[in-house]
Amino acid sequence: MKLCYLDAFSGIAGDMTVGALADAGAPCEAIEEGLRSLGTGAAFRFERVKRRGLSALKFHVEGGEQKAHRHLPQILRMIDGSALPARAKHDARRVFEKLGEAEARVHNVPIEKVHFHEVGAVDSIADIAGACLALELLGVERVHCSAINTGSGTVETEHGVLPVPAPATAALLEGAPVYARGPEMELTTPTGAAIAATLAAGFGPPPAMRLQASGFGAGSRDLPQEANVLRVLIGEAGGAPEALTVALIEANIDDSTPQVLGYAMERLLAAGALDVTLQPVYMKKNRPGTLLSVVAKPEDQERLAALVLAETSTLGLRIHHAERRVQERSIVEVETPHGKVRVKVSGSGAFAPEYEDCRALALASGAPLQQIAAEAARAYLANRK
Image (cartoon, rainbow, N blue to C red):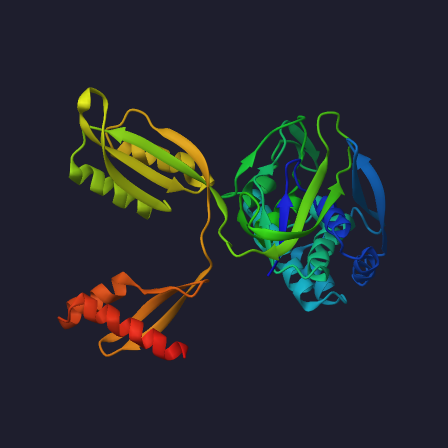
């Protein structure tokens, strides 16, 4: 599977995305030809520039009706009537619909009535369509994105001076990890946020991949503090598709009952913890206690840490960061004499019947649990031949 990783350490904008993907190998001529089919009357070009000494491609949109206000249906008709590949059309429509939902929410109007101001200008239409086309030209099947640097301060818009991130940008990035570092300015635009929020399958560190290409897309300014670029990494998925950075939350507890700790474990797993363990330990003054360990996604770290403090008697905890590797796996359903059982299969070929399915069938039928598991294993092996 071909992967693309958007490294938004200096924010993300539509023109930066197109420039970065072109720098990583998407043919500039093919991008320009596809965008001309939108019928905007604009011209498109790529310029090699430097940002803090880094070579990057700057994507320019020149001419066209830059100040036209368009509604979402009109923009979607432009996309549908273009010569873009089917998947690029589909993705561009999704991005604009996501953007329309955010604008409608911010301005409290139906999505069909949203006036696309800045994002309805020709350059923003070209940015979104160009990014989707470039991903298709590169053969990218899945997009991942880093935590996003939104910038800070204020930004001038047609609605006046607004705080950064702008309201539509903030709405689009809900649920995504964000931060602000660098100059007080807008580093992530609504267009860039819409591309990331719509197309990214996940946010965090780069997925495991065999790196094939990289590229830098230039922003409009050459900042004194940092390179104003978006980096993209292109590669083939590796054997560990869930190579993740995780947060390890730990607490030593010597004054809670087993019932309280068991309930805390249930709450943490239900709240999205990747794993929770309880381990007996000896603490200071030779007191027997329990080491509570929670494995969490980085974006869930603070929420789960607050849950540990709320549901246990600990007054403090430790947070470490580690890397997690998980083999590729799939689920196969098999039929046994007592009913259906799901079987988990790893990328290496190892397999195991799903315990909860076997348990449910054992309770319902009165047959021993081990018998149900053995029947499921035999059924899987028979189907695999």
